[in-house]
Image (cartoon, rainbow, N blue to C red; front, side):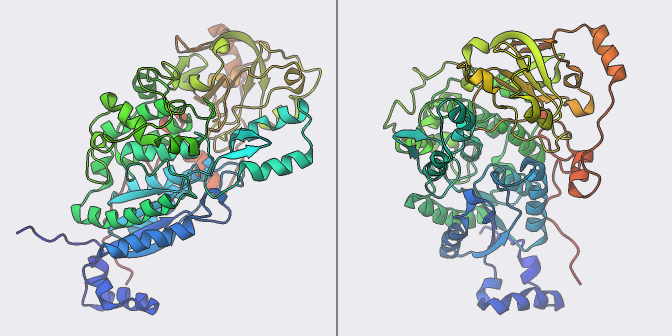
Length: 572
């Protein structure tokens, strides 16, 4: 007869001594019956709900649905809050706080009597931050993705939440949009609960979650407002209780093969470049070796199958109606590694029955939207540790380009000068933005896809080569080189670029070069002075002192890895 699993929570609730009394007694003020403390799996519902995170504003309700599933399966649900990260409100950038939120998640899980975890996620960083924290504890864990908004329409035109942001300046300057126009558009673009409805970073993170095997099959594509979202949330509550009994921990799901599947899938859906920095950080927490070059080697030759903004035409609601991620994963079956998922089955077994209902939204593998669309990793003297570009969202005619640098030393410098009619810039120039890397900003904001100068927009120019040590929103498009490492603030070659220097981009040959002699660069480096840190106290200082570079996932150096779930000492 199989030996009954000893629950972690029994270390708190199973004692017949003083501490057992303490742990049980104060919870009884909630009216819990005695059987809650006698061998039932305790499930922590980690909720990133916040009124300051509108994309996650519905997760308070979702938590109650998950609890129903936990109770039905014989578990005890206990909900707890963690730091939420509202992409549209937090300054200077949510990326500054991703690692802090992961610490909150990790320590909340480890310190409490929990046997399994349900992560309620939505807006961009709430997904990787909570997964990172959970990985460092390594308990059975399942993810409930919050889901995208319903499709937006404005005056007959399909509008993507997020993607509309990058059109504001052009709409103002070229199309004469008024304040009243934008007030109307604000509501039309964000017309329901949920996160951005393009294949932006939030949808990319949900897709990543499913391709890693961390949520129930088909869950990630369902819009937040669809009743089936709550159905899957309830089933997730049931499933996590079974996962505890099976001891199906994160480390048994998140293998090297699972990370490779996520890279392949991201390429096929035209996912955000932000996947690189988040997936690398997650791998670091669970102990899987993942290098920047892996994203190019594994993903760059994968065809683009999904016709969604910003790489295509449609939105996430259309994607769901077309069959969603299950169709994509079925098409990718020959390329996927056969890894275990949280429902206990292998990933390739989960999607055998998937059917495509709209081939203009999801293309077949044999006739893709683009033949090779995965993220490209660049190397060269301007990015010795690497940089990235998203070819599926870039302009073909700029994929091989040489132009003169127009340098902005900071975002403030950019805002002050970009629309100066006397600025020496034309369509062939390369916009260079410094000081927006992990340490420099700090937090590596999504500013890499800076707006073009007004005078060029009025000439009909819609794209230029832009390079920086920052990131780009997954909802944005353009020929934008990102994540340059080392960043300018620590003395990377980017710091040495001057106005008029020639920069050569060759995506096909994976090259980004500053066409300046080594002798001249050595002279400039000798005269370069490190900028003063932008924070002298608090978490921001700790972040600056310990954050790793973009190619390593921008985690804090002392957080890489995990500490497990064992806590030997009690509170008395």
